[in-house]
Length: 330
Length: 270
Image (cartoon, rainbow over all chains, first blue to last red; front, side):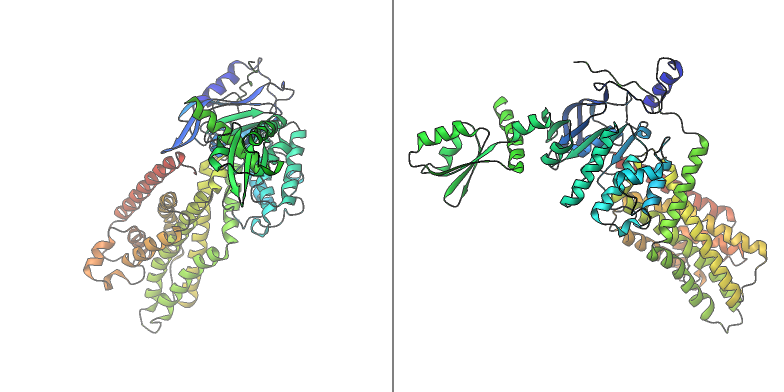
């Protein structure tokens, strides 16, 4: 409540100093639209966020990448003002979002178990549009979210991809300055996912600022200007998609060897080893030093193969790196 | 690298006209949503109607006192119907929408939470009115019910207003029951409470113990108000006591619901 009051005060006393346009345009790209400082939040014994810092810049798509349970949804809920931080500060569009006073300028696509099924797509969008001061015209929302062909169907009649598009439409219908997309493509097939990506790109081309959470590295890579990797409530990496990929894209070495699993494990640069039939499979960051070491230690080494690790392995490598770093620090 | 801070543009206060428009849309779509759920729309209307026809009209239709019996059942079955609308339409639907994350989507938008609850109350009032008018028409057409217009208006008005305390009860249940168990919880409260309050079998036919128990149950008080309106109250007590009991129920349930609402804020949903 206090933030709302102070925001009104600013409006009262600083009219000439503040641009009064409903939609602020031409903000410098470095302008911070949301700032989070040292945010901590626990649910009982479970630490969801453990001292998170981040900034969302105007006009960017920031992807928050992390496995399930990393704290992504909690972070989004805190920025939306529906969850209260235990400590730390959160500022969204220049005010404290807690209590929901900034929601008129935000949009959110959240993960939801079930949406009332007997209302038509048009009715859902019409209702949510009415909540916002400057909503998009309904037809425009239908067009951006790809709902024009299904607007007269009830929600219960829709496919999984179409349902996600309705939730996307609900998120954008208020013409928000900052949009949260919490795992927008989870559970979708490839085609529906591509369609959703195209819609998100349309929004970015219109200059919207988007914070997207995902546990797919390829999704963050395909859409984001910047990626933050979140794991167990901590931000463990930050960079452009190519930087993150370079850090994450490890190599996989496969070979048969007389060495024992423990001996292989001890080689510097080996992130993990598993036995696959009579061969070892090693996850590493850089292949060359490990191969050199392997050949030196075992002159019988055979069937050597070096491949790019898959995205999932790469992601594991990234989070595992962080964990070993942390262990070393302790 | 100090980034420019975003200017704190205040969100303008919503004009009254737009707030009212939100309430109207919320109410309209809540009603539409319920009307299109066959299980809800049909069962909440047809069960009280069916029981009314059975207990109030068909059984003992050749008794000399059958019109009186039909009038009596109009009040008690009306009470039964109004309760179902409030407890299922408010309680079960809130428990589901809350537990399945839909309420969270709404609360992430600038919707005033009060509009959400007002929409549900509106839907309960409309369904209650429809049920009462149906029962009244059937009673007049087939049960020999004859009431002065003002008395009929009073009866319908009392029972429809009775959906308010039971909506408050639904609200409290909705904040504590899990989505899957909510229908069972409501039935476990609703059916025994209806029976013990004399909605099925008139209280004067029940054992003394149950008659004492009834005075502690909310439906008893609503039914007595309705029966008093048509001049059939047992051992007529002043209306004030019944109104006070229902008011106390409303306040208690709203308090419980407010507690549940706060408790939700610390959880992963709400």
